[in-house]
View 1 (tube, rainbow, N blue to C red):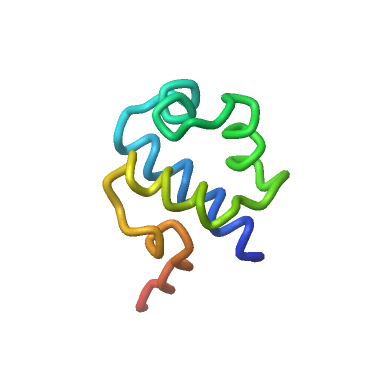
View 2: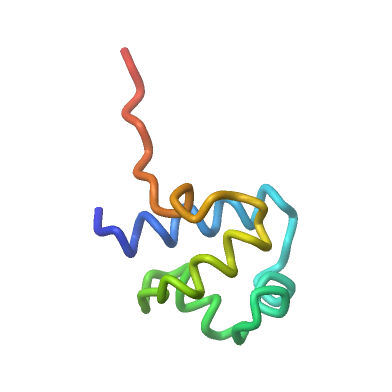
Length: 74
């Protein structure tokens, strides 16, 4: 999984957990809704500035948006 895909997956998860629409998150992070959709589909890479703004809106550390899932222990 690429870092872009990791970011997209985490972005969708955190946005859903915060019960925000793409439109609302985009508005609060000062990006277009279309761009937010592209980020969630891993169509584009976000700049560090955008990662920081999104993280602030989601109330998470920017690094949390880039963390790969830990493998489950069996």
